[in-house]
Amino acid sequence: MTTMTDPPGQGFRLSQLIYDTRYRSLTIQVVAMIVLMLLFSWLVSNTIHNLQTLGKDFDFGFLTQPSGYDINQRLIEYDSQSTHGRAAIVGILNTLLVAVLGCALATVLGVIAGVLRLSNNWLVSRLMAVYVEGFRNVPLLLWIVLIFALMTESTPAPRAFRGDTPDASMLFDAVAITNRGVYVPAIHFASPFFTNGALNWLVVLVVLGASIFAIQRLRHWATAKQEATGDRPTTWYLILGILILPTGLLMLLMGAFLDMPSLQGFNFGGGIHLRNSLIALWLALSLYTGAFIAEIVRGGILAVNKGQTEAAYALGIRPSTTMNLVILPQALRVIIPPLISQFLNLTKNSSLAIAVGYMDVRSTLGGITINQTGRELEGMLLLGLFYLVLSLLISGVMNVYNASVKLKER
Image 1: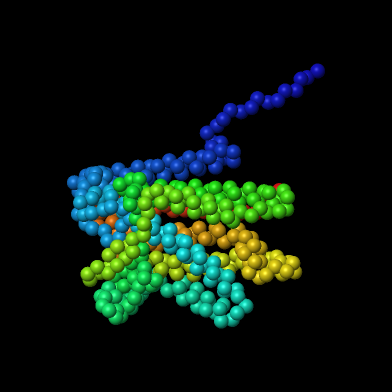
Image 2: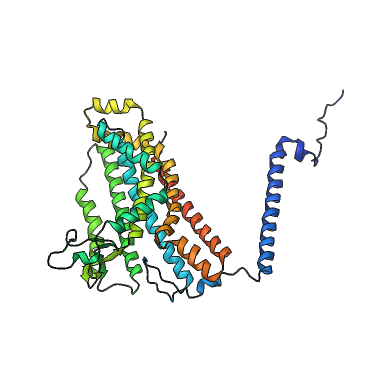
């Protein structure tokens, strides 16, 4: 009787890395990675060699040197004797200010225009179409310069507010719109916790953020109780109290008071001075990006089945309520992904601020600092790193929100 046994298995052969489908993809990836690393090392060594030939080294010590230039719009303390590093921080904050304000206003304008483009009112829908097509098809730089020119040429000079019968007047006796900028009331602290004004506002924002988080938890509790009992508890007075009382008490302890702008000599003093460059850049970015967001919102609404609208109307729900509670929540799943790209575009397009003299990070770190120190490589690397980190942060936050509004399957 003969005993049958399995043939001995063959060992691993190098040819399997190419001909065996189990290893081929891994081989290709390893080879591609090695080639990429070799190319990167060659670029680095070549750059270092060229810098040495020019008598330069790779050093970030220039950030500690005095900047020697002024920045007209700033959120923190700064003067010409501050370092280039602090000038870069001022520029970063200015960029973040425009990005946050622009994204907020562009979203509001885009949602409103996108909904109104679908209105049954012929005049309203055509006006929104003119806005969308007008701003989408004209370069952003032209809108920035145009709005800046309108702000500078069509608004009165500060001297127009002088005299017994002035040619111009302040809005609500609190806001002055001039050809040098807009002056609005400012909140200051008589007994601040910190000598640095930015830290005081940071404390206020932390308390406000904690209040908003508490309001969200309260809403979740109310929703859970409604699902369990069918009766939603009244929470508006609790929400109002949580939002106002902690922040208001904190600002009262810090001695908050309102600083109103007033005409002092040939210009306004007090309050906050919003320069025309900031306003022009903000409005142009918002109107331009809002036109693209409007089309995204319109497409998202059209993606929702018409049966949803008909069912809501059959239940007696009004059109405005149907849009807010039925259509838009479902359309968000289509709107959010392309909306992320528009937020990223707005943030990066803010680098056009140099056209109207707004000192963002492109003008400070990527402009004057590089010209004064000759550290163009280091400056551009830092500038690119900032935009990369900011873009990844915006994408991460929006992706988290996108995951929260996705359709949850059982």
